[in-house]
Length: 103
Picture: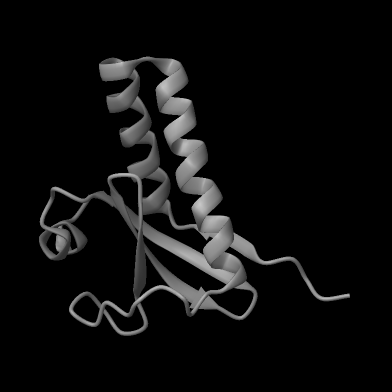
């Protein structure tokens, strides 16, 4: 039986998701923050099943792809059994600049 697609969250993506959660929780409450993070994670799972579906983002790095989830751009690297999420960046930000910023 084939392996289920996997989503791995790089350390920076984990920090991004924590920051998103904290900001949304302060602005809109815990329920909204939980729902948003769940929605982003669910979309990541979908893309893990079709890792080449997201468009390439060569301006960021070789083999980086992305998709939009709610107001966020999820940047990931496809792998043999799923994806590794590298960053989750708000769509209003300059994604190229945010990608290059140190944590």
